[in-house]
Length: 119
Image (cartoon, rainbow, N blue to C red; front, top):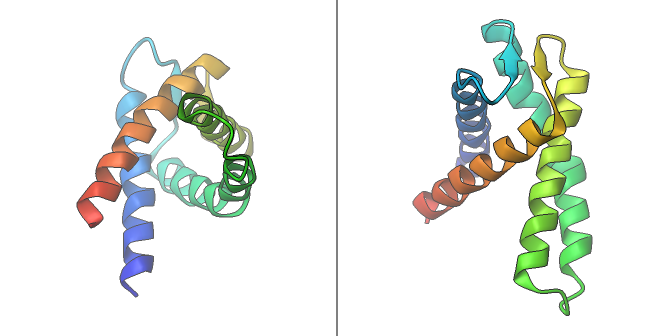
């Protein structure tokens, strides 16, 4: 039960971080209300649980790759997930893929902090 609570909390923190980033003028990210923020949290969580985790695990299996390459690919995959969420969720839009990459980098740092606090 604790794992489910942490997962939902992680989804909500990620959505709040994205919402906060939407206030930065250079981010070119927009939400149309609270409901779209909640829906983005659920959609991103599902995309991460189903697609992103599987792709990252396949990529990490090849141990000859450097940590830097794995990190860069991981950020690009996360950016693609954010972009896909923007495509799927009405009320959430991104100005460009660069916006998704910046958001993915920031979310990666937030998730590292979140993972460290769970231990």
